[in-house]
Length: 124
Image (cartoon, rainbow, N blue to C red; front, side, top):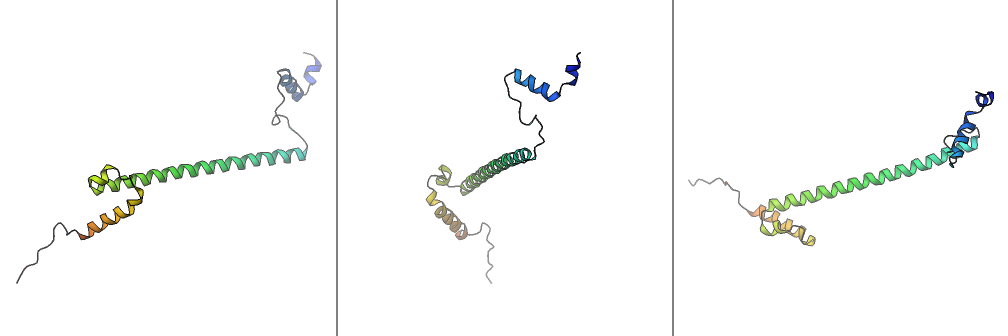
């Protein structure tokens, strides 16, 4: 080994190795002593972090929206199955404008039906 190879700067060796492959040395590999350059890199990284957090929040909101949609559909299917009528079982989502009307009719019918086991009054 020559003394030239032993005294060579490792960063210069790395730059030469990367340069011979046709690639530029990445900015993260090359350390700098310039405070302004470090501040710029920190600001760039914080901007990327903010962008990633925003995308993560948007993804979480999309997931929650889909979960709410799924729960709503499951509830509507359960309501239509409990109604027991052929009309409700055929397609409960056929006319969304009638959903409140149908639900009010079902609630009214449930209130006017006599209890299944009404106690009989004894005559004296």
